Image (cartoon, rainbow, N blue to C red):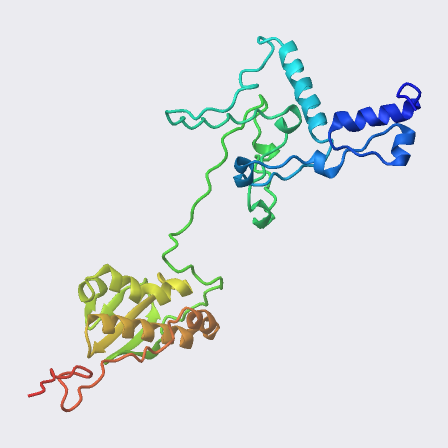
Length: 308
């Protein structure tokens, strides 16, 4: 049978096998017109240089095509954007600066908004402050009787300040009538001093051991101490004081005389006892000097201790 008379399929199969050098086709592939390469023909023999190289890891099929298409699209987009539209740092890799950058200054404080401008600042700890209830202030305006008709304030009368506060105020009681021959006797004591006192109607003169008050007690403080009981009772100008004092010093003698005058006033008017007692004129002051003890220099002072 001649070559020209062969079926067309066989001639194509024969040509394909000859042209591919080792490619074999199965009967089904020849019928369909598809020729599969043989594994021996597809894999060429490796050379000596290729044998020493590390084997390549085949990547997944179809990964290179999308990557190439994406890269091409990005390059076209970069070419279309003009250089003037690009930002100062766009498309450029950050380059390290040779000189250190100075720290940026702090941002200025924001101006208060219109809503917060009227609100008060909150003081920390304000809720801990005690709530004080202040007394109501009285109206200190002058009464209508002293008001000036022209609208001003007329001069108000000056009140008498009264006696000094350091002196005891007299007792609010009516002094009794004293008989011309009345005598009221009492004894006062202070420390080691003893005063025998006699009160009689008079003008308020003091006679102590035959001498006046100013000569026997030169100190004004002692004179005022002696006069306190009569000034408190209101008899400072209605009774004379005659006293005999012995023992102690001038301070204790003045205290003994005051004690005796106060006791004599209680004898003359028992209603004065409460006020005189409240002011301490009837109290016997028991404070005295403590006696010396044997082996001591004084009542409490001891000699210096010596170890050797």
